Image (cartoon, rainbow, N blue to C red; front, side, top):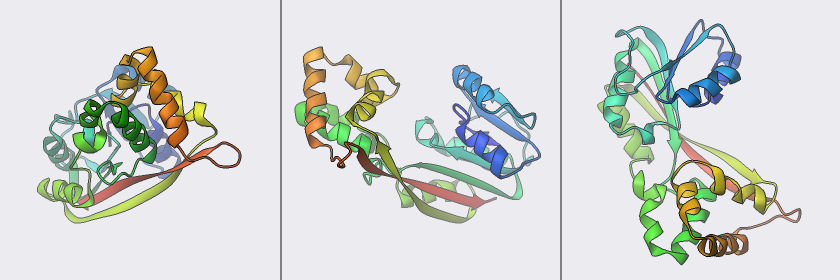
Length: 224
């Protein structure tokens, strides 16, 4: 089972690499599920509208439950993890991962908020490190333990985030959903241009104009 499947990126990876007999993937957004169904047209997967805090599955019916980059967006994450644990069979495995926001693990996002805060101190409270302080190794392991999991492990996953040029970096902040794009879009044109210029001068570049930054997530796994 996958909780918070979004557009189905992890669902597709599970189907191609893990060869499950079946996969139930839930998300509260029908829009995301429509894209997920298009991205993973496999008879083994069933995409459903669902609430992570009240999973519509019987207790002890799934061997594995996973969740990717979703837990921090759930209002009652302890209830959600308790639900994920509930639907697991005894000795079943639960795994989830989220970005290391407090540790500056998402450098392209931290660069945005650093520039925004330099121009507008009020932007500081919108940054993910302020909004998701529990996304640390200890904080996440503690959540898993309180949900009733044993043999809990937390591992850092680091990847390079490479943008071919500044426009490639800047564009998502002007069209996407989320706190940073929302903040950017609401700025007056002059303030938005100042932010763009500030980022342009701050970001590191390679000889080919590319911008290479690091991203780090914490991956947690445990057993019921």
